[in-house]
Image (cartoon, rainbow, N blue to C red; front, side):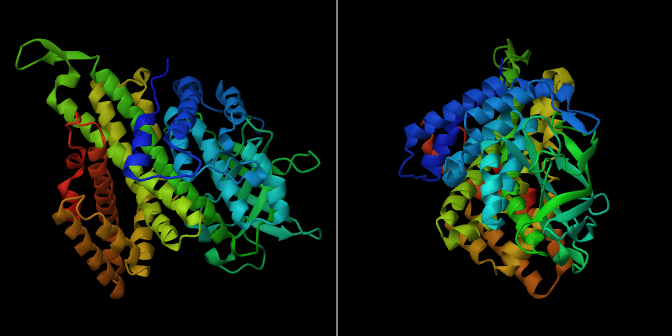
Amino acid sequence: MSDYTPPVDEMLLLLYDVLGFEHPEIDRDTARSVLEEAAKLASEVLAPLNHSGDKAGAKLENGAVTTAPGFKEAYRQYCEGGWNAVPFDPEYGGQGLPWALAFCIQEMWQGANMSFGLCPLLNQGSVEAISLHGSNGQKQKYLPRLIAGKWTGTMNLTEPQAGSDLGLIRTKAEKQADGTYKISGQKIFITYGEHDMAENIIHLVLARTPDAPEDVKGISLFIVPKFLDDGTRNAVTCIGLEHKLGIHASPTCTMEFDGAVGTLIGQENMGLKYMFTMMNNARLSVGLQGVAIAERAYQKALAYANERVQGKSPATGERVVIAKHADIRRMLETMKAKIIAGRALTLEAALALDHAAEGAEDAQKKVELLTPIVKAWCTDMACEVTSAALQVFGGMGFIEETGIAQLYRDARILPIYEGTNGIQAADLVFRKIVHDEAKTAGEYIQNVKGRVPEEHRKTLLDATDKILDMGKTKNFDSLGYASVPYLKAFGTLAGAAHLHKYEQSVSKTQTAKLSGLLWPGQIFADI
C-alpha cells in the first residue's frame, strides 16, 4: 500500500484560485482529470518502489547498469501512458500542455519516487537544449525519441578537478574530416549516465576544441549517443557508480569518453550558454523536487502522528495520539505552511514560463528572478521539513524501516546539485538584483503589498537598496555574505504572500493562519 497521495486538490486550488491559471482548452475539470490519472501511476506504481529501490540500489557490471527491481517495468508504463511527452512541442510528438500543469504532474513523480523521477527530469533538460539550440537535423533525429521516452538524455558537465568551476574542464573534442568530433575525457556525477530502461542514452557533453579560448569562453556542447546510427556501441562507458548518502536507486555514474563520436550543437565555444538552457530548466525542477519530497515526508509524519499513542491530555488525563500535543501540531502546521508556499512559488515560475513562451518579455524576466529563489528556497525547505518529519517520528524516525530516514537522506542532495544554493544566492544578488538594478525584483516586492506584514516588505526593500549600494561600490565580499540571507528573506516574503491568498481561498472552516508560521525573525535580522 502506498504511503503517498498526490495533493491534487491543493494543486488545483493554487493554480486556479491563488495564481489565476487560465487556458482556453484546460478548465478545472479537465485539469483534475489529467492530474488524477497521473496520481494513479504515482501512488500505485512509482511510490511502492521507493523504499525497495533505496535498499536494492543500481548495480554496475562490465560497464552495464541494472536499475532496481521494478524500475524498468515502471518506466515502460510511464512512457506508454504518454507522461514523458506532457510539456513538449506536438511537432515532435509532445502533448503541448502548459508548464503550469506539467509541474503539478512532475511533482507527483518526484514525490512518489525521486530516484525514478531524476531520469525524466534530466531528459527534459536535454529536450529543451536541443529544441532551442540544435540544428533542424538534430531536432528531427533526437527529439521524437527523447520525447517518447525511447531514448533518455543526460547532462555531462562536472569533472573530478572542476566541480562547479566549469572553466577547469579538460574533456577534449577533436574535429574529424566528416565533421564529427572525437570526445575524450572523464565526467563524474552523471545521473542516469548508464541504465537499462531505454534503448539509447543521449549524452550532452561539455568539451574543449584544441584551439579553444581559456576558461568558460572555450567550452562547446556536443551530442554523444551511447549507440551510433549503425547500432554499434560508441566509445563511452560507465566505469563507476557513486556510493551515496541517498537517492540510491538513481545511478550516479562516472563516464569515460575514449574517442567517442560526437556532433556539435550550434557553434563552437558557445557551449556554456547552451548548457544553461538545461541548467535553468533543471533548477526549477529541482526546486519542485524539494516541494515533492517535503510533501511526502509531511504525509508520513501526519499519518504517524495520528496513530502513535503517547502521553496524556493535560485536560482529561487520557492517553492521546501525539497529534494532540501542541509541539507536534506546531511542527506539522509549520511543515504544511512551508510546503504550500514552496509549491506556490514553483507554480508561479511555471506560469511565467508559459507566458514567456508566448513572447512576454516581463514574464521571462520574472522566470529569471524566480529561478534561483525556487531552486534554493524550496530545497532548503525540503531539508527542514524532512528533518522535522523525522523529529515527529522520534526515535522511530531514526530507524530505516519506517522510511522517513530515506526521505531525509534523499532531500540532502537538493541544495547541492544543479548549482549549490550558495551559487543560486550569488546569482540572485549579482545578476538579478545588481545587474538588473532591481527593476524586476522591486516590481515583485511592490506587488505583494497588502499580502504580507508591511514591516517585512519594507525590510526587504531596504535590504534590496543595500544590495544595490554594495554593487555600486563593488563591495563584493559584503554582497557574498548578504546573498544567502537575502534569498531566504525574498523566498519567505514571496511564499507568505501566496499563503495569504491561499488562506482566503480555502474553506471557511480552515482556522490555521499558515502565513504566520513562515516568519523566522532572524532571517530579516541577518540582512
